[in-house]
Length: 159
Image 1 (cartoon, rainbow, N blue to C red):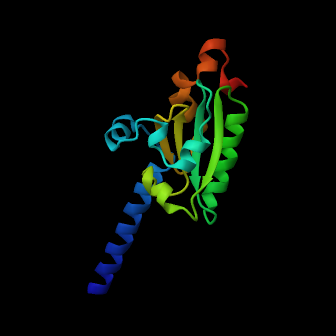
Image 2: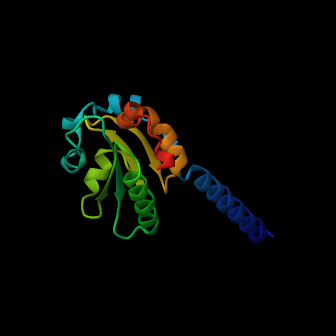
Image 3: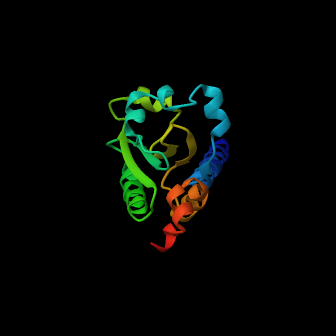
């Protein structure tokens, strides 16, 4: 009888963890205060590969996807993000493979791949998404940071 209860407990725990992971997948997290407290206040404070991925021109938001070569969801996230960046003014997409440089992922607080981090040109982190992002939610969250959209009145979702 003990074996039955252990099996039921293991199945219940697995279901709970599965539901927890599924609800967190693709959810946007804002990290302004945490980044500032962690000492990453500007582009100079970021690891070299991350700083090099950011553009020099102001008014551009960079979606930095942190991925690894063995990550299957990373390929889907790359497709979603690159298409979004192509059709949205003021938005860039960069893929950073950290397979051979886990210290870079650790330095910016990435614990799983894919993780997408949105940065301003100055190196300020705007938000991050673990898993494959939902494009509508991501555009809504970035709307106020996309300068060219605000200046020209274009709507990226209709592009």
